[in-house]
Image (cartoon, rainbow, N blue to C red):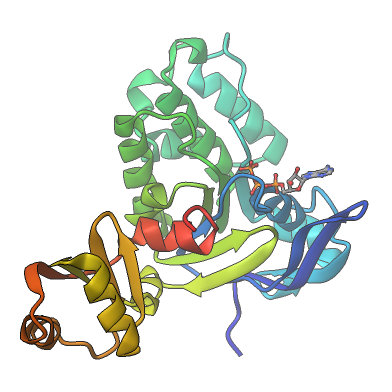
Length: 301
Ligand SMILES: Nc1ncnc2c1ncn2[C@@H]1O[C@H](COP(=O)(O)OP(=O)(O)OP(=O)(O)O)[C@@H](O)[C@H]1O
């Protein structure tokens, strides 16, 4: 049996009558960068809080490293580093002093401080007070804190939130390097697909507490049908003609869209021209991943 770093079985959380997380089954394998995606309010933080033992599930179970959380939580959580919302630090202390506090709490080896500073590329700034740091540097320090104690799993809740594009780039490069450099598995939550698209090897998409998809991004892309986009006149007559022929037709912005299932744009063109329509444009359109994500989560109707 495959042992997952994170596995949940019917994990559910209700707040009074409201179901924030509904019977979700997550599977995260060792060494993966798992993008946990969903719009605001989807249930990501609630799931993460259950995985970190901060709140109890109403129903269902979570397993870390193959063991049930409920019976081994302290030992399991020792191997998990996390950064939930923004990192906590003392602005008047230096980066090194902040890490020293966490190191002492964890009783980790002194050498680890220089090691994690190097990983997050803050060695040069280790003696600077954190209040002078940019938001990106503070997030990197938060990741360094989360890594202290030889962690095997990192859980990062919206680590790129509020960062500018160059900050996002830095955090992304850092996260991508972690599984290979340290052998850690990373779960990262976000409400923006493009922020995790370039680093996640696997994604889980949650909306209104339900897990809608789990798998590699390419599988998500393959799930969506491409369309044939046609510029044709007179458009209404062409639409009627295609509907009569049982094609699935959508009219948007003076263009007709046909769902492609073994449809050949060349043959459609020939058929329309043969019927006397004037075809000014015909192309095959693949939906962007962002559109697939928005459709799944209800952003586009
Ligand atoms: N303690 C609580 N009591 C009642 N409702 C809650 C509580 N915590 C979360 N919720 C509700 O559960 C739903 C899911 O919230 P959650 O914070 O998990 O979403 P999220 O996907 O992390 O979104 P965001 O990115 O906005 O934090 C929301 O509707 C939220 O209002």
